[in-house]
Amino acid sequence: MASVQTVFRKDKLNAKGEAPIHFRIIKNRKVSYVTSGIMMPESQWDFNKNKVKTTHKNSARLNSFISSKYTELQDQVLEFETINKGLSTKELKDKIHGKAPAEFYEVTEELLLIYLRDEKIGTHDADKAMLSKIKDFHKGNKLYFAEITPAFLSKLDTYLRVELGNKTNTIHNTLKLIRKVFNYAIRQDYIEPGINPFIKYQIKTEKTTKTYLSEDELLSIVMLPLTPETRMELHRDMFIFAANTGGLRVSDTLLLKWNNFDGSHINFNIKKTGTQSAIKLPTVAHDIIEKYKKQGKSAKYIFPMLPDDLNEKDARELDNAISSASAYINKNLKFIAQKAGIEKPLSFHISRHTWATRALRKGISIDKVSKLMGHAQIRETQIYAKIVSEELDKAMDVFNE
Image (cartoon, rainbow, N blue to C red; front, side, top):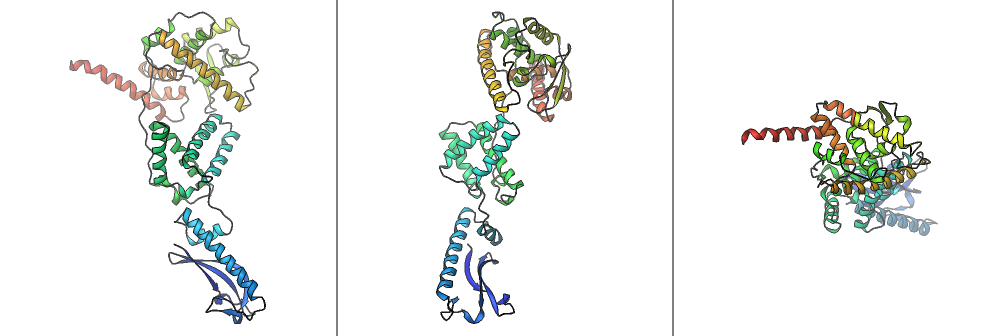
């Protein structure tokens, strides 16, 4: 615990025989000084009572000021140490001079603004929702970084799991947000690296199974009779298109324009990463595009789900349009799966998993699969290689029968 004391700095005597009155902070045998702004002749300082002698013409006013500053300083030191017992005397001094303890919610909001600036609307909205959970758990006006200890994280984990019914990987995402904000705060010099609780606390995750369709299941969707030129048929065709064309994400499929198609390839920028991609269309995908060219329902988009007058430069408008369309597509895909006798929880993203496993089974090398899927790192693709490998292992089990 730090201690505070008023001292006459005899070691700082000037030529006039005056010295400053300082407040000395001692913690773990280390010392820092905070000035009171008062200079005092040595003859006017009462070393026994540690205050200005009554013979000084302004003794009452000066002693009152020193006493007030001393009490204020003690209160500040107590407050900062309550928040973070690990602060050094220098850090205490810095905070007393106006550098307040870093506050978690304020720094998180700063990071959220950066996501809006960079048009990362999905990340912004997801992180904002997770921040609300943390605020509900803490039930306080402020949350200082130093309060977020391994014990705090453990209690938050329990709250999310028991009170909100969150699964392990959902909890992982919330704790990962906290870790991300800590890393940002450290990079900005808002906090010291030593208070990062993730040095000791490990975030738990559960392995998830990638759901994908077999060739027979995919064929059953292709062959399913649907009323022509309906939304149901459109959503089925978009799914089949993606399952044959590099496993396009739903956002990229929705945003495909007629000027992205050169007759044999689609050339576009991947929305998630901003990188360019060029994919040669197999016959199935090419036939689907030709089908919608003949229908001519949109002058702009290949798959007529988004309005032609959509302002793609407005990140919020674009995100809302894609989210609404995706929800509609996924609702219809679940109905299609039911009609096709598929028990898997079908969503558009499953077309991505389906393409990856099909591509690897057909002998496309993992580096090419990774490139076509627009993965930033090949380890993202390796999970599909593992799935195919496990399928082959099961196939070999027939020799044990």
